Amino acid sequence: MLRGLFMLAPAVVAGISFASTRCSFAEDIKLPATLTFTAYDTGTAGFNIAVGVGKMMKDKYGTDVRVLPAGNDVARLAPLRAKRAASAAMGSGTYFAQEGVFEFGSKEWGPQPLQILLSSVDCNCGSLGVAADTGVKELKDLKGKRVGFVVGSPALNQNSLAVLAFAGLTQKDVKVVEFASYGAMWKGLINNDVDAAFGTTITGPAKEAETSPRGLIWPPLPAKDKEGWARMQKVGSFFFPQLATCGAGISPEKPVELGNYPYPIFVAYASQPADQVYAMTKAMIVNYDAYKDSAPGAGGLAADRQTKNWVVPVHPGAVKALKEAGQWSDAQEAHNNKLIKRQEVLAAAWADYGKSSPPSDDKPFLDGWMKARAAALAKAGMPNGFEE
Image (cartoon, rainbow, N blue to C red; front, top):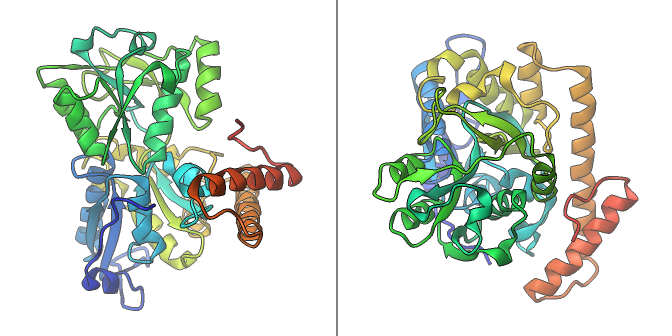
């Protein structure tokens, strides 16, 4: 069941058409008169960065960019899949959508061939922020505490479970409290409806929580704890250790060892024209200085700061722009081709599963798909990533 989806005005739909384009003032970049992006809720890091990129496109190319806030991964991707948006500012949900797992293992979705334009890794990290008044100092102290989940957002929920796994905790060790959106979850932390919520350290809601009567801390994930990291990466393979030097309660003078992955990740579908994706990516690369300070985390979108050889492929249009910027290699090309092949294997497995008269009920349907998915990946000699 898809929840939290929203309707877009016809004018927005029309605005996405690349039939009516205008030339840039330099670099031969062609952008449409209007563009629509989707992002997390208003005030979040992804939303603020998308707005900063949009302002650059308006200033440099006269393109009006509308950023639509959406509370979960499903809601962010629905307009993109329907061709009502040109890009979505995603997080680790990009990987879950590609793999066709969790909410994306439903009949309405399946594996999504998402591909990257640019992604950000900056001074911030992503982890569980915990209300300071709980007395929690280490992640293990979260046992028995209330942890926020967001309906329809497997990324946030799986990320929370990955962080808990660092301390050897599972969902059964905490009290899960569900919310309708990311913003609602963080409001819940401030209002004492929950004790911990996942987010990036620079997200607006985290800063609001820090200045609230409850306060906010980020329990550390020390890189030297190899066993903890092995447990965490088993649940969230896309995380890597990083020292956070910015965010709510964090500074270069008071850093915290946490984990991170690219966020936001500007994505498009593989089916979107390469010239369309190239124009957006190229505009972001050549005009980096115009938006890098527009919002915390935007600086991580620099072409020379892109995460290499991640778990989701880069779109051919973006590859062209990165090559022109001197930020692409033969090794990354080979890795990227393997990831595109993986998407093809998953798409074929999904099509075959649909022809096999799968169960109609949601749970049996998902269980059957996960088995079919595992078999197809094994046959192709590719890792599953979601073993039981």
